[in-house]
Structure formats: C-alpha cells, structure tokens
Length: 436
Image (tube, rainbow, N blue to C red):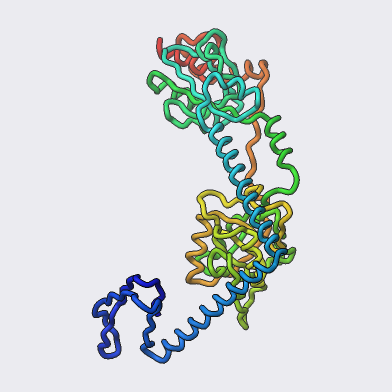
C-alpha cells in the first residue's frame, strides 16, 4: 500500500520471475490522483499475512495515540504534570548550558596566553594560567631553577637587574612548558638549558602557573558532599576476544550502587551484557529471555547516550528487569557525568554508569556478533591515579649546598660568574660561557 497526498509521485521497482528467483526488470512511476491510497494485492499468502499484521499494528498504534491525546485533553492533572516535566527538562537543559559555558570559559582562560598586564591579578586570585615571555638579546637573563624537582624546570629565583627580573612577570614556582615551540613540560633544568642554548633568537618561553593551594582547597570544598561519580570496573569473562579486559565506569550519584554480591571482589557474579532496543534505550523493550543453562545472574543493558534523559533510559531498563545500565558516551574523551546531569530530587534504583565513547563503541561492535558475560566491581586502589606531590621548596642554605655539590661534579666553565654552576644559573652563566 502506498500512502500519500493527492498529486504525489512514487517510484516502484518491477521484478520479473525467472525460475525460482525474481530479477529486477525496471521501475514504475505512479502518480496518486484519486483516491489518496493505492492498494496492491500481495504476491503471496505469506506476504498477505504480513500486510494484515502490519495494518492491524498500525491501527492499534493510531488508536493508542488518539486515546492518549484524548486522555491528556480531559485530564487537567495530567496536563499539569506534563507541563511540570517539560519545565523541569527545560530548566535542566538551561543549567547544563550554563555549566558548559562556564566550563568553556574557565578552560579558555586556563589555556590561552595571558597578557602581561593581567598576570598579577591572576596570581592574586590563585588561578591557573600560562603566559609567554620573549628574550631577543644574547647573554645572561638571570633565571635559576629548583634542582630538587625531577622532570620539570621550575623557577627557583631570579637574579636582580637581569632581563628575567626586569620583565616583572616571572616568579618562583613558575613551570617552563615550552621554548620556541618545543615542549619542555617534562624536561629537567639541564635539558631545558640544552634546548635554550641550541635555540635561535628571539627566544620565546612559555610558563605555566598552577592553581594555588588555597583556591584548590576552596574549589574542593565547594564541590563537597556526594560525589558526582564513583569509579567502578567492568570486566569481561566472555567472549574470548574481550576476556580479561577491564573498562572504567563512572557511577552516577543519583543512581543506586551495585549490590554487594555484585561488587564484592571475592564473589563477583557473572551477568549477561545485552543491547537495549532501540540502542538509545528511550522506548520500552521486552526483557532478554533467560536460557536454560544460563549461568548469568541477571542482565546488564548497554545503551547509547542521547535521544532522551538518563532517567528515562534507566526507567526503561528497570522495566525490562535489568540489573544495571551502562551508557556509552557520544562524544570523545572520558565518560564522566556532569554534576548537574539530572535534578537533585531525581533518583533511580539501579546502577547507572557512563563509559568513554572509544571503549563503548568497541564493546558494541563485538556485542553485535558475540554474547558477553561480565562482572562489575569497585575500582581497585591500584587502578586509581594519584597526583604527584608538589616539589619541596628549598631554603637558601639548601640551595647553596646543592650548588656546591653540583659545582664539584661539573668541569670548570670558562667565564662563569662566581661559584654558581651553569645548570643553576641557566642563562646567567651558561649563556655567558657560550657567548664569550
């Protein structure tokens, strides 16, 4: 059957029976004049039955839609509830936009090159930022480095009346992260000296100023309370291609944590991993049937992010007797819930987790062809990344001792001023030695 308005045109393929097969022989152009629907007789009895089933399903769906619209029209309470839900979703979307704008602004301020006239204010506010300075002349510039720090070139102090001090923007604890376009973020003082001496004029140095401890503490205090995510681990038992692979999951604070017998490291139970249908998990779908020899203790459903809210996805999974919902992120990067992903008052009774787009799409490609048995457990301590300790500040006495120790180990440097070795003087003495 072709449904369409009067005057519309449809193109139909024509098949010619040849033995047991039908070969495409051409196309027919059909223009609908009157009535509005054209009906064709089914070619086989089976096709006729399929058409009847389809027509009945279409009629049921239309009747349900009309009944739902009539119920909404006659039910003022339902109208108010739907209107409230609409407003909540709009407010939630607005909050997410505001958070995204704020995050983007903070990221922009953090990563852009800060003008020199704004550096003092950002230091005072304890913000993280980066800035660039340029030295166009040869000779000492007066930068000294903290030798107690490995793998970083951290400013220890500046020599007075030399170019670095006269610029009046560089300060102790600043981290040299680039020099004439070369990444120096993981270079120690000696490596940075070598790069500097091998570079051409003008020399452009980029420094990173990290967020102050006070501001970091204040930021952590502002985010205190229930955490937005808790890390869990997804481990595969089958299929063989994924066996032993572990994926980080981020559990939403507004969902239930995995049950103790699900998350206990000593009694991790196997569960089946299955797709929601459709893959977005926005519409109700039948539960995956259990097999007679099924060793799984339940079904965990995998859904793709988007199409509806996380709460809607979780409710459809819960209605299908799902033990948990794993959501695949639809953007690159780590799969992490934002603090304002859902309303504070909302909650679901099953675990809802988010994984990265890369991991999720790999799992989806395998799950299309193979059945999977999984376990979910809390992230182990050895899987949790730890931040590096802040380099210890050296006293003046410790600096003098360190200089003397290095001075004894290094060969004599012609024209080096005083007792300071090249690695400490950086450009004060090392550049002087080269420039002669």
